Length: 211
Figure (cartoon, rainbow, N blue to C red):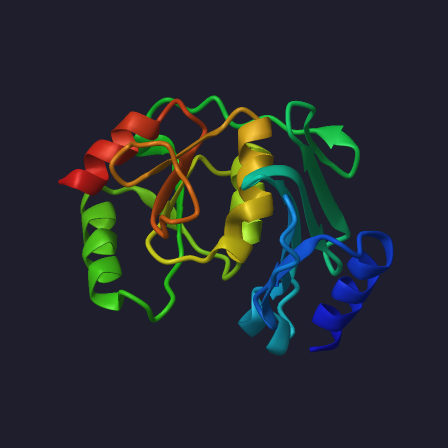
């Protein structure tokens, strides 16, 4: 893919010794403490159908910790940037998660990809039974942006890869949000299943998932 090649070419020009992981071309290991993690187009099906909710995710890790995250949505004219311990910003405006404390009146995001479909249907049935408002926009990085800017309150992820969430996770945390695995433990990229929230409804989401 041309987008993948263009991003890698730019990184190699300025940081020739850094390692690079992309969805399209895999891992290029340069035995560096620095690793770029890239998804050239997240929301591919939206992109192919002319739906403007798609974007590029670029993260920089140092010793396996994300220190920089960039999400760019060209058709929406949105660019979010987060730096470790320096905050998260959308088009220059500082981001902050929502203040919602009641899960019954929260917007909960969930992706509906084919993987683990039976389990996802089970979660959906429980969410609908509890009359919880569910949203899906077909892009993991857009979902993470919605959490970071306070438009939505929780995101249940049952299948994902590092390039899908690396930049967005930093954005959420720098905006004051919380991320754990489904057991409430500190997240890492060995997990593929997460709860992401504004922090206020996190324990309630965990309890719900464990039912």
